[in-house]
Image 1 (tube, rainbow, N blue to C red):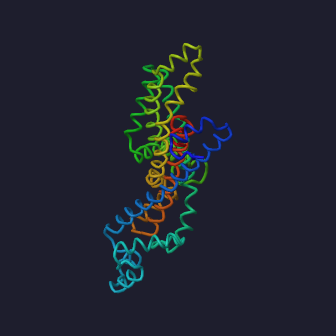
Image 2: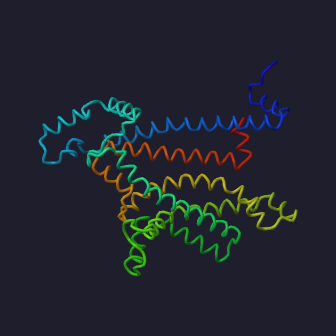
Image 3: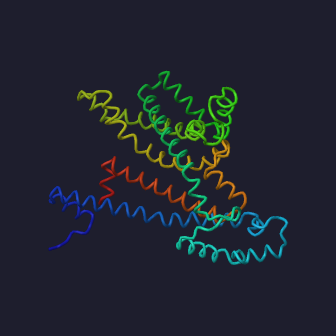
Length: 338
């Protein structure tokens, strides 16, 4: 008996399979797709690590001098650089770093002389809480206002929402943070302006981080919703007696959400990047300050290992977005499982 191997043969054969067999085949194909997307993370990480490693080695500064200080003798500095391997060729050092990474050696900070893992995982929860809260707030506010602006096009709510989104997109994050500190911390005195001693300490940093992302999501949601509302299937649904709420949430939003999902995935990475500025403005002891100080002091082990974790996390978020694409849109799901 001939076994179907090509895509068209599998599709033709699927028409004659029982429902349980087709579901099992789709699960297997989806699993293969997920594994393939996860494997693509490896070359992406290698490329990112190579670029960051090259930048850190091209920037001015001597690692030995950074560790020993400006008063150390040049002979002592040269001995330390030799011990750390900085007198070896660039590619040799990069391959050596990858080998240490594969063996679980994340390195030790030049500045604090502490293992990277101890410092990183001690500061990670703070930044993650800020990032997740800002992501949730920006998603809820941006998508909700975008839907409202599209449904109430050219109304006062639409004009107000569009104007606010443009203003928030134009204001730099550090400036917005300082304005919030001045208004709610110094003038009104109702919210803390630095540190994370209590739950109220998260309010101003989260608003600062979420402002830019919510403005971007609002404008994109409005655009995609307006495009979906004008489609023929919306007129068909209205002619069949579909209620306005069902038309918006069931038909329009489901077709308009795909581009928004992509921006939501990338905005989470932008929020993590913005945490560097936000934590500096609000004096928060998180990863942002930690990585920024490492870059300033050319603390290469900290910069490289932080890049590994943050890049991996961002890649996993984008894989999750791709999977959501296949879950939401049957057309994409059919292309994926073939």
